[in-house]
Image (tube, rainbow, N blue to C red; front, side):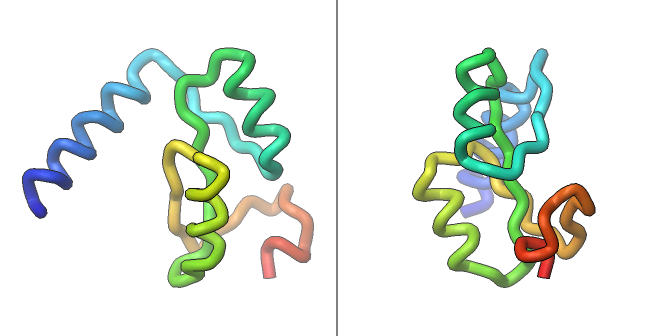
Length: 80
């Protein structure tokens, strides 16, 4: 498990090298960013909200940030 985690971290660092993570709020925005050349699309979900993470995984988000702090630019229905 530790080796897999180390490899994952190494691969993530390689993906982020020379790129910018864009903060998007919809799958459509993520697709636009990828088409524009974003090498990694990151999405946020709330800690412990597994269904949110599974949805993000299903739409093939590259990196999921599990955080209690969500951007205030998100609609209230998503932040709560």
